[in-house]
Image 1 (cartoon, rainbow, N blue to C red):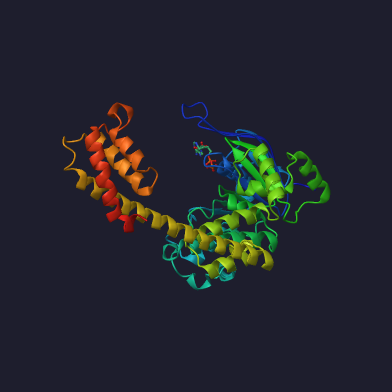
Image 2: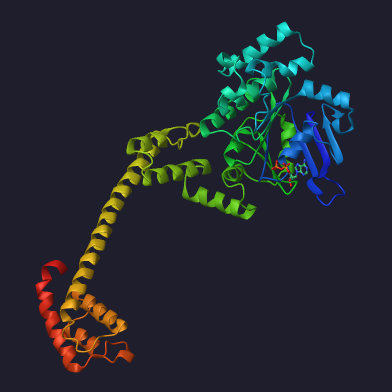
Length: 442
Ligand code: ADP
């Protein structure tokens, strides 16, 4: 199968020769096939956007080849580059990049102007795209009069207006709330599946990896790992796929699944996790992860008992755990019964805490009633040890003899260090006071 994009030994160095020289990409080799959904994934600064901009011919390769449709764009002249951009590429940016002084319809129509498409033809096409994404009624408004999610839909409409086969999206959900993000991701998926567009998405969000046929994991300007999503039907023919699969690190689908949830794990940890998941559960990693989150929400009281039940049953795409009816019911019952037990335990803990508070008050009371017996003013440490003995006597940890021994024992040996007669007196009086407080201490 002929690749759409073939990048060979690409490197990009910014500010070459200056003190600020940055090697943004080094030795990148990437091949992308028509109608694939590809993700460049990695932490901020790893070179994802640079790679995307090289493909968009907005950034030049320092060394290496970038061949698209058989043409090496790193060798193209300005005029050829302009034509390449107009006929091959639609771009979507994190900041939408709409022109603030033009209305929504004009923004969408603009790429056609450069292609010298007649005015009459321009508007209906732009309007149809706005209608498709549910923002047709806003065509006369200025971009700033729209929400972020709506502006991003305008920018997607603009990327489609020239019917280019390749859509490049640079963190398109980076500025959006979760609902608008999901909407944008759904649109991109639809463009790939229904409109047969090749999509390249740049993201650092592991939750988005599930949408792509293949993911290029990047770090420090290099592609460090490439994974194939076995859950999606692949666009390439069997021979190409076979070739690609062989070139991968031989990760199983279970591991690739885990990778999408824990992209930072080393290969050995991934394997260990896959094995443990396999041994411990019938659920896949994504279900386990979702289940954990839902249970946590339930523990924190963020969702009700009923919502929790419904979410266990709901499919993953809807934010649920995707369990079948029986498993959802079983897990729901176990979690709810555990939670109500925890509730009982918590109440006991609270009650015990209250007991402690009562005991502390009684210790204090008994101690204060004894203070006139203590002939000399006890030191702070003596008072502390004395109170500890009273507390132990109340809880029954020591008996009357043990209590006396503690009072009598020399201070240097850990006792209170009272004179024998005083210790005897206090012991006697404490026993009497204990009878008085008996109702509270039992
Ligand atoms: P990412 O998209 O993964 O966040 P970028 O491709 O934007 O990463 O950046 C890769 C590296 O190149 C970073 O170190 C960044 O600071 C640097 N860089 C990006 N664009 C430029 C530029 N125009 N001039 C100089 N350095 C740049």
